[in-house]
Image (cartoon, rainbow, N blue to C red; front, top):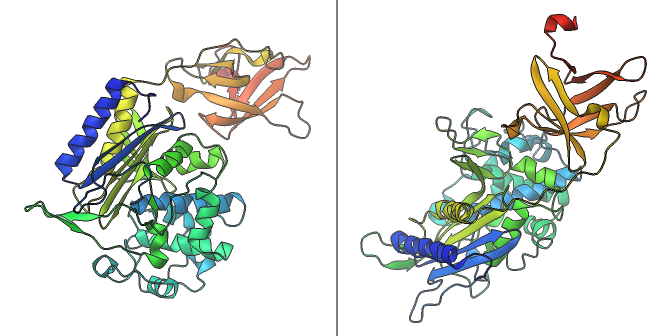
Length: 452
């Protein structure tokens, strides 16, 4: 444990883990909390391995993370996208010519919006025999597209197996090798991979009535590994959670992680409490949206949750096939930290003079409503309302032929992102008006009739 959390909060978190381990009847539960890029707390309840001498887990004990693996596959795909080696509008047909699913897009598969059937062809969850590459690709032609693309969220392990094939065909290398080189090694995740160490945690199924624990067999996923085959540890997943909360370019750009963590499809149309982006799921509690993923494999249940704005994340492992609500507990741990020890605001410091922006600052009007321009962090911002941070926009200067320097800006963050802000000058060089997303912006409140 670390002293970076107060003793009272640490005890509260420990109590939650102990209660979960007992109520879930999981042989063991391991958890860790990340804040500001570091593992600041961890706990291990019960046993990673049963037997005559049960052994507890440590921060370096490996658990199978199941579908949390999908986030690694997605990051790998996005890193190839950022290098220009593929696009998200590429299709299955670009990599499996002649496939019956040739029109399905990579973007749709990443977001579980492709409509492809949930599982690879066969009964791999009964036999625990996963296909090799040849058998997997052959099975794709037997698989169904059970819903039209974007009709509804439809979770598809098959889609992520296909994304693994795309990675291999683009790079000419095994999926694990590519993930290791592009994600694991840059993040220092030395105990994460497809082959577990001898001291790994053992997975169990607990009889719901007798309460006895039976060891589950190892499941080697072969060509389906990209959908759920990785093993990892509290320490390694803490490094991963820290990266997701505050990406620094070691894997992909911060903008790309932001893109992956934006909702593309709702997972619950009625409640609007869940969504899925490009490889990452989102869950909402109250006013907070948490990002992460759950994972399930025979003998293991995993939950990863982060609150990116405050830089807090949690990982929870249980070595049980069923009953453990690992993703829920991970969210609970993050929420407890945010509620008990909220992130402190940074101190304000005066801005440096920006004479090049002075002519834009202050109160303007558009469509009869006030629009205030101001400087924050040395950059130009605007807001519609002091009470609504969602109404704010950040701008960057953009050059253009025939346009004076500083008379053309692009909205790069917030409201109307991507739109142009243009400065129009009078004959004497003074600013006459602005145009934002083609709407006139004037120093005085004007009716539409006044603009014609």
